[in-house]
Length: 151
Image (cartoon, rainbow, N blue to C red; front, side, top):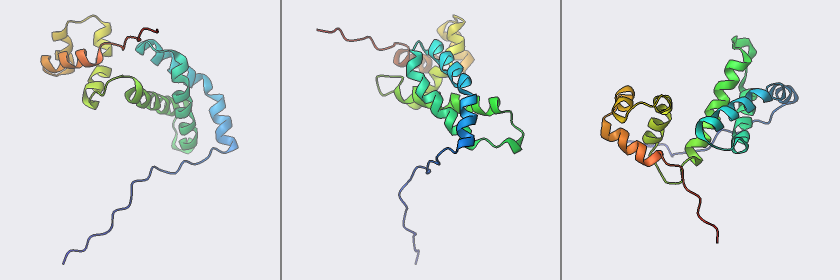
């Protein structure tokens, strides 16, 4: 007879509070988080104020997880953490409609080819996806929501 173990409910990892040393480390690198927020704001045509919070959250997570004994430069480690948090924020809030994760990822990967002004066929080829897939992605993700007129 097969005996199954009960499933535990999924819990997010416990957040460890920052100690004084980690807070000081994060404060020394606030400029790095601000720089990444500005870069994302330019690339996504969003107000930088909307991205500062997620950038700082990534910085704090990086400060908690940074281990100097591993030989990483602080800036290399922290930039990756900040960018990751900003990408999570954009994926969660950057689109007004529910768009599949794969299309959102494709849209993010297409940023550079779009900036170069390539044709749809060239972008699809560069991203290694069929043209109809690229066109669907462009239709779904390519338009920022228009503000509703106020009465």
